[in-house]
Image 1 (cartoon, rainbow, N blue to C red):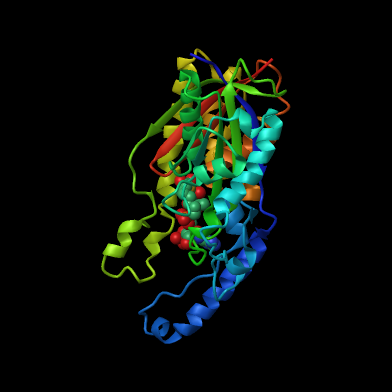
Image 2: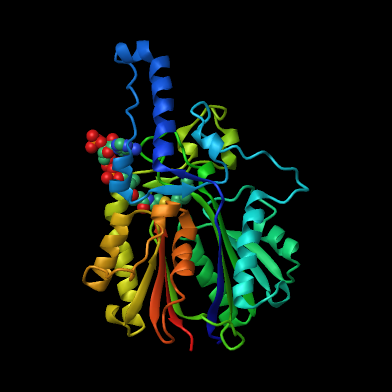
Length: 375
Ligand code: CO8
């Protein structure tokens, strides 16, 4: 069995971003317009008026201050409230592949690798812009990578599950090196007109190069000690969009359940203990304790959730920088969140230092990756 290293990571951050103030102004303009359209029905008590959104609430409930998006004007247009991403022909590069190539070039450079060194591509994301051919195969072709490629989806846990899939293949010898990409266009499956969740998500793409540890040479690389994944079915985060929708009555209607929806409070309460226990048992099985950890790179959904998980795992309030958050600038970017945190806050650890990359989300699903900085 081969040992596996993470030898490079990359983050593609869309240029455009939306502050909470801009978001709330657009939402409130939409709400006022909708309420005035429905004024008679509201007066008769048949329709509930849409209340205003609030910047203070957003920061307090989530820790999010801003989010990057592929298209800002469509999201902020009160008449539209949805990103404007023009359809591309079959001969053009897909949007997800385009994002993936940008993140991949950074990760490959950091790893000191070229496409010729890579044997497989995994595109792990919470939604894919088409069913097939796989986005990963498009990325493979664009980069000129030999071997094979496939897409996978475990919602917010896609990246850690992708790391486990890649690491297992490298361990067993089916690939020397694998490029895993996580293009997340959350803005296109978020309902920006829903006050309860319009502030939660942003767009980004991350990339990770994994390879046989004995072949890895990149300075600052990490060795994977082990990975652990778990799933437990829950309807509390759900998106009913799928190809069967066209077979059902009313498929032409604007159905809210065809986008992201969640019972946010339940998710918060139920997922925190699942994740804390996953990390604790994973550490114990590796004969490690929380004191051995120098850093936690957690999924970036909610600051309060991360504070609680960190406190449970470490048995104390995490010190400054011990559990870095990026969600204030990126919001929840689904599977990419923990990889952004890892990519931005892993250079300063010393050889031999341990850390955990951990994601969690819809499914429910949770993934834990214990890493050690290489000498
Ligand atoms: N402005 C002002 N007030 C608001 C707003 C708003 N925008 N939204 C809600 N309120 C009000 C509510 O109406 C409510 O009022 P009242 O008490 O009078 O009824 C009050 O604020 C409290 O509302 P909530 O109970 O909803 O608020 P919470 O404090 O629970 O915070 C959160 C809501 C932030 C959603 C929180 O519950 C949370 O973060 N939960 C965890 C969520 C999570 O981790 N989800 C993971 C999902 S991500 C995933 O798995 C990937 C899915 C695939 C990607 C999808 C891409 C789109």
